[in-house]
Image (cartoon, rainbow, N blue to C red; front, side):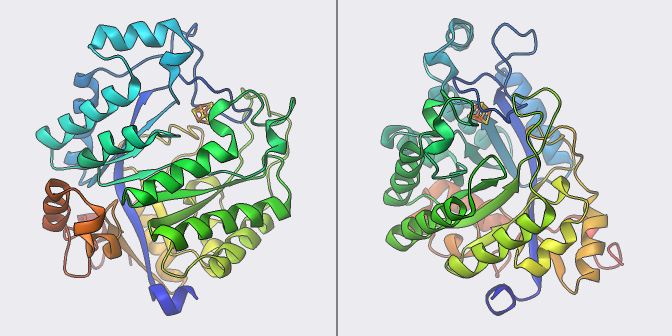
Length: 356
Ligand code: SF4
């Protein structure tokens, strides 16, 4: 299926990560990204800090700026509310939209926003200033909301809320990234149900540009520190089932930095390695460094495939820019794309010879 629909090209997006705030009103049992407002490390990045990170990314040839942030911390914590007010904003979504605009005005990057559950108004606010959006569905299991489970007391992890966000993004014509987090207590049947729900939304709206399958990682400082990690076989099976269940035009992605044996994902049907940063750590899994891009190109080549850089918006959506992209964003994305829709400027470390 992968070969038929995607050929031997495996893509990645060269991106800079901007963790706009690490405060969040949820408390997922596996999260290391989030910091409680009492922690001295809890913060909201200032516009200067955002721009500084963006410029570092630009210097290293990034095309995408990924805003990742906790969910609506201002609704739960005074520190987040006051922090936002000091910056001149009432809600994190308003601030995020302003920072996307700043990035568009001051840099050549394309913003992608990963802001969790969103209302229709929030999507409409963010759409003109971003090329694509994302939110991991993670799972449709309501069981995991129970006490002692991964999503207990996390209002934004109610599966229905996440499915509604995916649905709204589709109705509003947003190229959308979603996916599964596996190994957090869900059953095989629930994994399959989650994939079926994503596929159903895609059939209604055609907007799911990629599905990520991500494996739970045990870390010492999380509530689930003793929870077992899913074995590689679970990743391979889930990826293969995803490849077969999902419409073949949906890009299938797994992160290369969360398993030493990631190259085996290629045989399970993936066609994309996701976002790889030449400048910032993986803020969601900070203990796992990104592989060197040259090294990834080499191992991808050894598996009989070619690594190529894409933009945050996939070629098929760029080709339908009238429906999926704001005109200003479409102009920028088109100027960055070659005729096949992948990145026009493939960064030097992937030029012929470098990957051999
Ligand atoms: S995983 Fe996301 S929603 Fe859950 S606590 Fe962390 S930042 Fe918040």
